[in-house]
Amino acid sequence: MIGWLSRHLQALVFALGRLARAPVATLFTAVVIAIALALPAGFLLLTHSVRDVAGNATTVDLTVYFKREVPLESVQQLAAHLRQRNGIESVAVITADDALALMRKDSSLAEALGALPDNPLPHALSIHPAADASSSTSLGALRQYLTAWPEVELVQLDSDWVRRLDAILLLMQRITLGIGTLLGIGVLAVIGNTIRLEINGRRQEIEITQLVGGSAAFVRRPFLYTGALYGLLGSLLAAGIVQTAGALVAGPVNQLARSYGSQFALQPLGVQGLGLMLGVGGVLGLAGAWLAAARHISRLQPRA
Amino acid sequence: MIRFDRVYKRYPNGREALSSVSFDIAAGEMVFLTGRSGAGKSSVLRLITLLERPTRGLVNVLGHDTQRVGVSKVPAFRRQVGMVFQDHRLLGERSVFDNVALPLVVAHTPLRETDKRVRAALDQVGLLDRIQALPGELSVGEQQRIGIARAIAPRPALIVADEPTGNLDPQLSREILGLFCRLRDAGSTLVIASHDMALVNESGARQIHLDGGRVIP
Image (tube, rainbow over all chains, first blue to last red; front, side, top):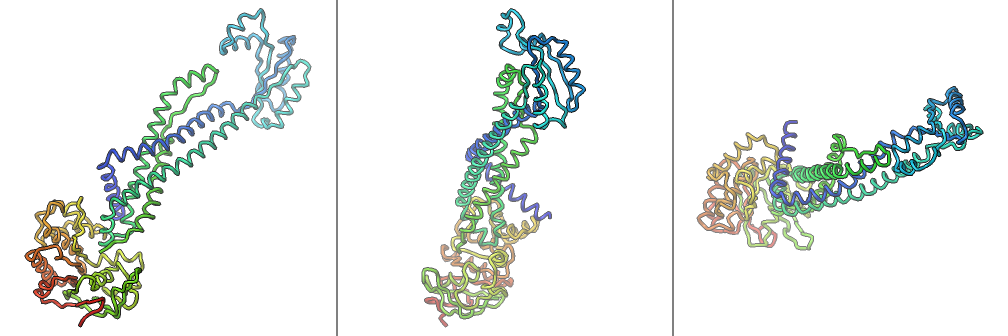
């Protein structure tokens, strides 16, 4: 076990030494890898941020708008009636005055609303169904029941936008997966080519090592570590790029989201995200190096 | 130690390098392979070190029928054979210590033992004081002695040398020959390919003379 560790440590130190001796070339390769990894990572982070907001809002509510002539007392009676019904978790009465105040506070229409002679908004109920009555069938039935009331002008089921958002998120995920796959192949190619050049540059050393009895694993090991280190370094830089880009746009994005009354905020990468990126980078580096080493080292035949 | 029994070697380009070559080399013997360029000396060495396999016939080295040594076993086989090359084949970017230690490192020899054996090998070739030097800082003769130190450091049962004095002046050649004689006296088996007949005759060692891929009695 100690011997095995020592061999790997030796290969790691050797690979680190090679990279450190050519800092500019190492950095350029790492930057190329970083850019390729940063793009899908950024997309993934954005998707997660949107999903987070959507996740908080996926509790589907129904909003019942009454005809303008319906008095508040009738609305409150109907609300009390609804609270007795199975499958309803809560019912909130939104008076026309409350709705107007809310619109004035949160919307850009405040000035226009102020110019109106009287309140154009009706009273409304916000109904939150119980979790076990949130299926589309149950909600459809409840909607139908409410629409049948003569006092009701409109029943709005707030699930439409959730469905649209889900579709957008699915699309974003697929795009991220596509871009990630393509750029992952790109990273494999970049690392594979870098390792190929390393192998060619150290052809004599490899031949001599084979002549004195170096096994294929011994010859290959430093190249695998070099590939993994390229991947790790690239993913570390990519994490830096994503964090920096996130920090740069976070302010304006939050401002924009607030102006629409949204709680949307870009998530930071976090320890888990960083770990995932390092893992992906390391594995891609190792795989690229393995492919190159398996292909090119086996072609080298020592000559005496 | 080494047995060639009616060995033929034909290369993919059709050239027949060896034709019915037979000889035996006993343990502790120093043998010179002689002959002109293209006579087949290097082919014999390549067959001994498993850089090539015979087209026909038996090559038995250190008790192994080389035809039966699997590809994955070749590195372990080569670790039992020390090789000395005409052009030294040293790693220019590595110190003398690292060069000599290479066969010990690939054999996963513990660090303390590696250090001990490298120093012993360098002491044997008289270059212990150059342990930290780079090969480029050494003379041609010193580089060849480092090559020999690398071959003997793992204490192999067999040492093969391909034209080890080919690039050296007569004085340095005699020094290297003296070194080989000392290794033989210490119990090593040596197979040396050389066309320097004066040196070979001076050694008094057995000769296997090759011409056109055949052993000339």
